[in-house]
Image (cartoon, rainbow, N blue to C red):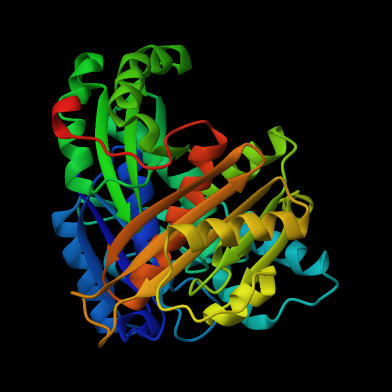
Length: 422
């Protein structure tokens, strides 16, 4: 099945807004085992839209058009779709009634120009939009089935997941049940993970399991797409592959599915009735910002200190002021331990960074010291991250959270995995 996505709008074409809808659609379709072959971006111009629709209708089996379903004069998708198919626009009474109810429930009168959103090409199939006024629809143009979707991201996402993907799976003849299993990892590169997991797909019977990756620094996501006739069949096919992925990646799996690393850390702290004092240099308090918004985070995080100035940082945690050239293992441990005691927390963690001197070039980097102090003792890890300032900052935040996860779960805080161990 050849799928094309056509994104419309001058603001998308000119780069005034980032086209996150396209990346969301391609990822969701890929997760369902449906690959996008072409992607087209076109502005709010009648001739350009007509050409794009006709071209897509001649080379694709499925076309998803995003945008152009609003009430304003530059929303042209319905009009051009009707022209491309050689049909008239007709008033869709059911959608008009739904729109009027949408405004009535909010105590407002529907503006006259919203009536335009209920004008659909004759013979089009309506795609419900439960959270907006833009009516999605499906129709044939050329040799392709077109699906027209709103540009508002939350409306698009509901329509894609609830209306479009089920229809595409039915058309493709794919098994009705599909599950996506995700493993979030930190500390291994994409090529390393690919090599470690070589051959795991074959453990799933009849090609029913597909392996994929999505690198988003500093994490890498490993994905398994499993197809089956029903949930029990999917679970049976997943089991041997899941066990092997866990064996090969081991402690480098930091979270799964919809979990986040900070969520795993907070849950571990809560399960141990533990509290935390944080000290961060250069990261700007980003570790605290990952933990604090979570439900229960305010009860666990006793104190957070962030400072670029070493003297200010030492004073803030209660250590004697002194000249600091570079951080070291002893100082990192002292900062974590003193911060823990001062806050009355069960755990203290310090993430301290020395940046290389010089311009912000990719061949520079930073030395990161992560120290974790608890009543039972302390542990310190030193690491190097090469790259620009933001690259180092992001990596240090992830490293700190992962070290804390490992410590709380009784795992080695510093670990490597070699290819021959797979």
